[in-house]
Image (cartoon, rainbow, N blue to C red):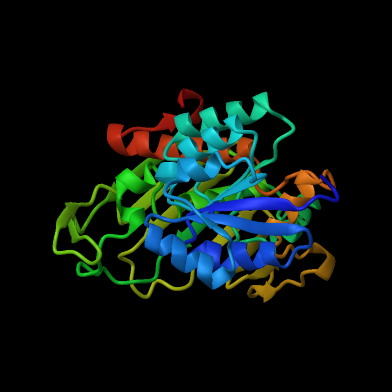
Length: 345
């Protein structure tokens, strides 16, 4: 397919699709956004008109079964990721699926196994973008022994006060988000790039606002997803990690990840790296080589993989299964009130 036009259908032209994926694909040669399907026909018409897309469909199944399409971009919430992916693979379509990968690890494994049966198809999960700029630098620092032995990690995300009046968000709706909790999976995916996976987790969470109104409605819904979460994880590399993800910790400061070693500390914050060796008075900003900076190129990597010009690295379905396994372990720990080994999942 190196010379042929690649026709893409979009299921779910939401915020990230409009801001990132559509401009990314439209900037590429020999790539055409041929069709779109949103939750309503009216919304589909609006997206098609806005971006010059030729076709609209009554439902996602109709789009996936269009023989003119070569690939499907899934921009929906997680509740549709697995069924659309499985149908697209069955219809010999390449798949770029928005993160989080699925509702739970069972769905994620079904997606991965289906992709393995058709290895010529490219199946890619949109990667966590939080740390793309610094990933290679952190990997190199760890490999060079800058930290010494990695002992502990702290990941903190949440800088807002509790707001009971905000309408129900899809991340707070378990029917749409599944086992994904706030930004936990996004951070864990990034951490996996640096130090690998966790062996076991112990989680405690709380839902402070238990009832929220639906958006554009007076109907109230119960909230089953925590709005404050603490996770202790034993990492396979030997370090202990603490994740604190919250929507109730006002003025706690910017999101950050800190790696504590026997010889140094590395802090990631505001898309920058700071470091200090033992004996230094304070952290100093670390330089990041232009060659090591990874920029957003999801759409280009997907198309290049279809054309056989590169292989998918960010993010593979196998990696998606790994972060969904962690997410499921956290959910089980919350439910059981005990430590859960990832081998149990």
